[in-house]
Image (cartoon, rainbow, N blue to C red):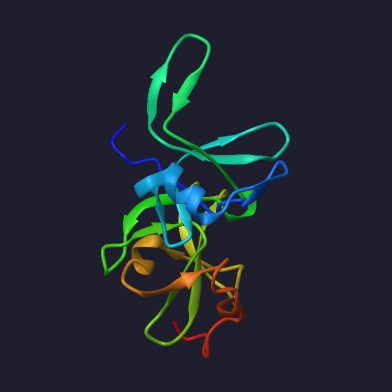
Length: 157
């Protein structure tokens, strides 16, 4: 496979009754923890729990042993799209971008087209190609900057 498969999620600090502070997440995840996000591979269970796991350090026929298992809030998990924006930052699901006219777009995976696209938050029935998003200014993501989901000043992209 030629493309990088990568996920990110916000750490779930109170998982299974255990309080995991930022120091624990930093210690366990190391360089995979940045700006309040954990980056790595995604593991889910049948109950809706989600973990971002680090590189596999050992394995056998029954188990895999990643460097770390960090429980994350499943609602915050987003996949890397395979593209970078004008500032060379990786574009993830849930990122928000502003057009030069002030319109806000959210990066989403569109099932009907089987691809990542930019959806204008004020007109969710339309979309633009991810290549168009890559030329826009990244203004945040829908979890940290939810106030931007009210849209921009104009519908003229």
